Image 1 (cartoon, helix red, strand yellow):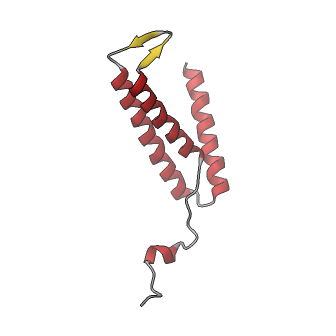
Image 2 (cartoon, one colour):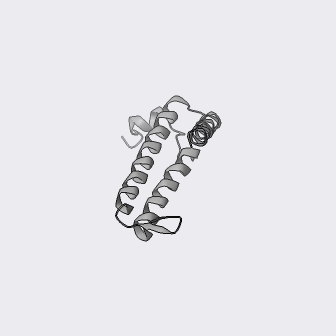
Image 3 (cartoon, helix red, strand yellow):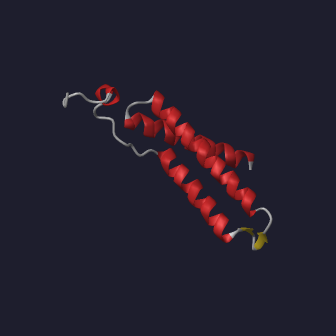
Length: 102
């Protein structure tokens, strides 16, 4: 009886927490949301007093979306090296599209 383990542990015994680029993106958006919530949003020196809460919620939404994308990518790519390549390419693509639209 003592030797029986949880079925999930038997399926993947070497499953560990893996750090990926989208983990850093999620942390960045959460830190940015907390910073804006505490200090307020300021662009070019003029404060947006009434928009700080809205901007905070937008960054929290971004963090949730990025973490869900990370979960989706982890399900498709089991190897950490491939995961880093795919997520790094995704981040690069998003930055290029952002700069083109800007």
